[in-house]
Amino acid sequence: MNIKYSPIALALTVALAGASLANAQSIPATGSAKPVVIDAAVTDNRYQLYEGEVVKIDKKTRTITFKNKEGETKFVAGPEIANFAQIKKGDRVNVSYELAVAIELIKTKSDGVRSKVETNTVTKSKADEKPSETITNKTTIVADIVEVNREKKLVSVKGPSGKITTVTVKNPALLADINVGEQVKVIYFDAMAASITTPKK
Image (cartoon, rainbow, N blue to C red; front, side, top):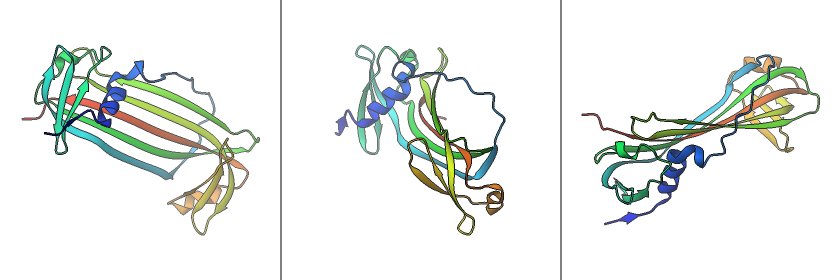
């Protein structure tokens, strides 16, 4: 029998332990005018990190054994997982990761200032629900447009670190009003979510 303490235990710890492990700092939004969204320059990817079934629960040691096609995995639920009593044998566990990138056009001339702002949000289940948690990270970068290639539908931007990134814009009509010297807001969004649910009958 393949029983192990695999990397998924770390993912579960991060996703279910949440606020105690995440650096959850709230940064207030600025009152700037809403920029035009270049919705064509968006990528969105979702990854399934783990999916399995609860096959054993040791309440004394707070150890949960999960099982999927790759074998069994043990996870020790720390005191930060307040909903431990709600977990039952036969429940399903799901851990996923999502990454999205969006670009918004700021209709101002570049003032030479490029910036980076990071925010973190933690969403937990209620006291009478099975454990679930989502940790969301959002990084906003103001970058300069350094090149526009309308023929190839490409836009190159320089961020605060000086690195130049080139993105493809699917809708060429959106390139008509984009010029070198203007700025864009690049938003990187990533989230890890973990949940334990009762299987549907």
